[in-house]
Length: 319
Image 1 (cartoon, helix red, strand yellow):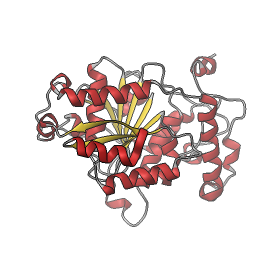
Image 2 (cartoon, one colour):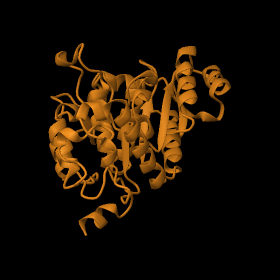
Image 3 (cartoon, helix red, strand yellow):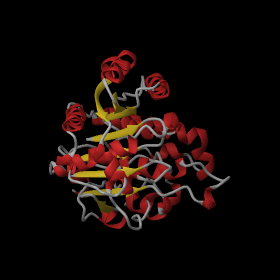
Image 4 (cartoon, helix red, strand yellow):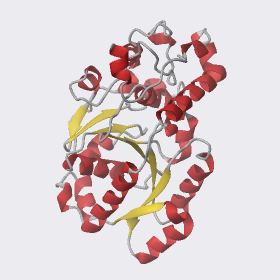
């Protein structure tokens, strides 16, 4: 199951993603957290204090070559773009920590294995947008076969910027973290406006809630989309200072909110055919918009009409 945490800058989405990831890990659930925000703070929020792991977005050559495998429709790593869909011969990946990809890229913090896209650095200024790095996450998710009871938690870019790529469609559940303010709710309205037609399950998690008046404010403005709220937390404040305690010591009301998010996520049912159809549709749009010109070939030829990801796809491909 894949979940994205989104929201305006400063809403607490990174904290929510980190706390939810730790909650899953302490429940004994297999979980992979991914930092896809331009401000790379998820590892720190998980409790990591050293150098970050190797970044997906700064090692695209290896990533693309690994994922394309022996797919005859993809001539080289250079021919792959962020939306390139898998096909027969592509290397589908899982969440086993000893897999070649996770062994190369992932680190562990707070009991959670995690990936980073990489920071926006000096070489990118005036040349490229941050989606050149988040595209690595999109490509990874397109080739991921996550099974039942496995979880991927992604801390997304702030605001509605995620709609600049197809990454926003790669999740079973999108949770918008909102403070009980006009600006917080405003980002939800942007998402609610853009999401229809893309099969995005969108819910709201209130944050920094102080009283019933805050809860009523959120309910009045987002209605049934509100699945819970996080109250102001001494546990979170201590964690932000580097004193990371077990999730079991988190305030009971906030544990209840995390449980509500997990319940909602587990209720989602992925339609692999619809999911892959969306992958292909975004690839064809990107091919026409810029990809064909950038690569110098018709990228529609990368679409394998006989391939469908999902349970058993990796075994079928091996056979």
